Image 1 (cartoon, one colour):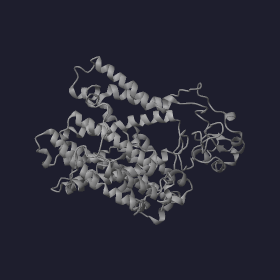
Image 2 (cartoon, helix red, strand yellow; image 1 turned 30 degrees about the vertical axis):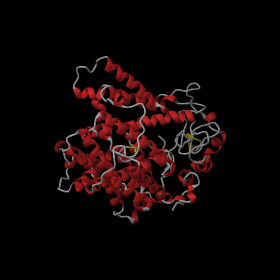
Image 3 (tube, helix red, strand yellow; image 1 turned 90 degrees about the vertical axis):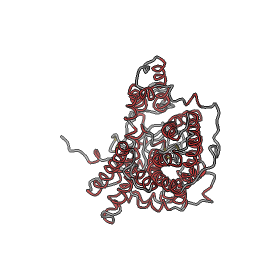
Image 4 (cartoon, helix red, strand yellow; image 1 turned 60 degrees about the horizontal axis):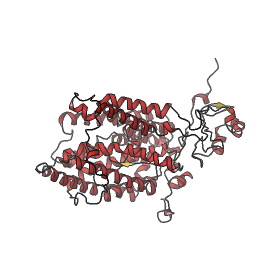
Length: 546
């Protein structure tokens, strides 16, 4: 038996994920862009519906009030997404409601000044005005930290090792909203999960015939002839990211639209023999898996509803499984454009604002982790400190002036069923660290373990006692503690960054991944940053990167 060669078991670290058909600077056709945009809208419906469905009845709101909140969240989320992708981080993220704001919002709802109002609609109006006021004041934290570049300065304490738990826990932290939610209606949830995975990962529909396997003849001859020079030649001669046709390979697309990666052997170098040869091909099922899954399963659920399958089931089961119990469509007007002060002028209270600041801090940390994941999934470089601060500043701006109910979060990458992908992206940063070091193993393990364990304790305690573990006479302090330690990503960042910057710091720069990370700290540290993060309309003249 021949000895195993080192190159056969080692995978070289890569700045950017490969194998994408569209990268951050690719432009699909208008028709495909519309369908993909509508698919993201369907995805945004998750938190836009779930958060108001839970909170509005507690506030005394009716179905009509709930519909107005949902419409406003979607409308303002669209404006926020447009502004963030144009002038913020410029990463492909969708802005939506954040679960991190639920705890301080519930605290405001239960405030004695509102709970004693006899009229439900009046109580709803007074409560939502107070929530608006608290969000407006607390969002000043993000505006200050963002535009002053303070958050960018703080990010200098981050390393690949420290970011692994943060990004991973943005995904892992949604596990309690994963299958536990699916299990509320197993006959709908499980088929949805299976069908989505099957469509997005396994089945391909060719618009131009069946999928072809690539062979030596499919790979450009120059690549085959020069492949014995090693992967260094490939990196120099096949640039990273995408070509003009939107097809990605080890770097840019070749003339035959052939994907080239470094994982199958040709000559002395590892190349990927291709799963799919993209020649004028539109993979309908995998690209629009969410749209197709939702259409099929909603029709299936509606058939079960009208056939009486849930007629004699418990009320809770009917709420989760039937398609006619939400009353959203029947209560919604055909056209409704949200406008400022539609519920009246915001009201301000110092206690409410201080409690809401904890949620803004949680949103800031979770968004930071999601920005890192978004950049990697878009085959871009990690956002420099200046770009990260710019995005956080815009996020605070949007909360301050536009958002009426909840704060933005990066919903595209934190949707429950995509949690596993975000978690895996976070773990992929380990390739830049030394995982043969006990220091690295300790920091990674402790941060992820506590990032899951501490929030789980807070959730279970709250479920049994109807209040959080922090229970003092100072409500704002309770909101602070219960909100921060209920966020897995926030706990993970606190633990990982503290340990990473205190344990053998000077001797562990290579183990932490700093030699790779340091060039992405500044805008001019890597030539690709200008392509990915430069502001449009030549605005960099007025807002030069620091």
